[in-house]
Amino acid sequence: MPSAEIITIGTEILLGEIVDTNAHFIARSLRDAGIDLYRKTSVGDNSRRIALAIQQAMERCDIIITTGGLGPTVDDPTREAVALAMETEVEFRPELWDQIQARFKRFGRQPTQNNRRQAYVPQGAKAIENPVGTAPAFIVETAQLAIISLPGVPREMEFLMQQAVLPYLKKRYELKGIIKARVLHTAGAGESQIDDLIGDLERLSNPTVGLAAHSGQVDVRITAKADTESQADEMIQRIEEDIRNRLGTWIYGADHDTLEQIALHTLSEKNWSLAVVLAGLGSELIQRLAAAEGPFVGGEVLTTTPDPEQLVEITSTYCTNRGADVGLGVALYPGLEKQDVSLVLITPEGKKQFIRPYGGPPEYAPRWALHHSLDLIRNL
Image (tube, rainbow, N blue to C red; front, side, top):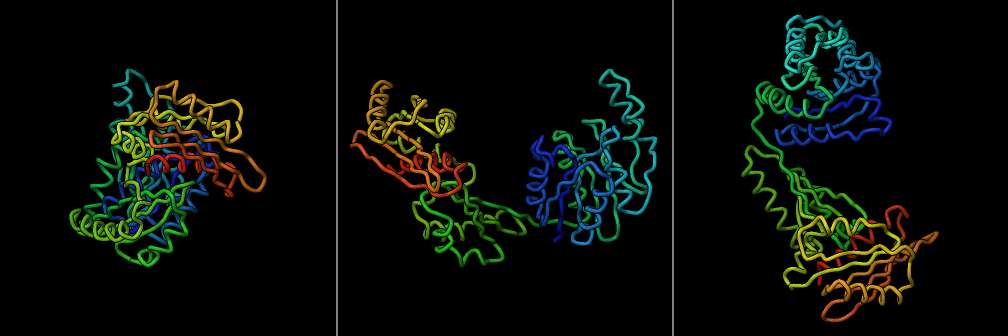
């Protein structure tokens, strides 16, 4: 099975001015095609640094996919960088210039002289026509590997990845397998607790099992390589059943399930509605509940943080005013070494009050409190 690396190009990515969504899309596409992805790299708009990154990747993998740097301006250096990495020059392709001009004509515009730069590719490269943009892509081949350079515009990159690159890779490397993943979401347990129960499964080679910890939530990823999708599904199902038996109710969902969806589903089954009062942790919980489908009737963000007893009274009053069956109050109290979270849960079955200490990074405390409160609701 071939291995791949992704190199995303753009100083704006390194400076944090834009989020690199291209690498995510390419990675998922490679995974689904059964190609192992070993590394992702971001490089600024510097031809020598890009060339060095490519040369280093050439020593490690079979497929290198770059994205970005194929525009018409001086700071779009990918063509020259790939040529430099391969110790060759760029060459003008008249047929690419014809394609670019035709594309501009469909826009009702005339290309400027700098657009002519986009008709240059490294010597010997296979050009890939770009019917949805003005930047042609290209492939540079050797006996051992393929360097594929795609535009940085997400719409163009995604189209060319699906329509040209994946068919090329499947044909060249005779790809027949598939890599499939399933993610189980847990709440109510820490990463170390889960690792203690399924650590032996994390040592498997196929399927593989890995953990990803978030504030108040831990994901368990199962990844299988197989010849067919049905075989991969069977392999994943076997491990998933084992994990579910071990972790029990800590698992609240899988893949695209969200904790707020599951919590509201619990309330729907009881025919209960929900109102929330928040203090000290922003409005994210309200926004997430409002965006989910379920019996959420409203939320209020307090401008001051009440003491725990006041929080009970405020939550009860707000719950009554909104006509809600369930009232949830959450207040975050900042501290130097740890932060306390006060939770109030009022239901037709009674009233509960909790104080939960949080000792992690302060900036993660609101998200931890959010997940902890949703976990209370889904376990009603």
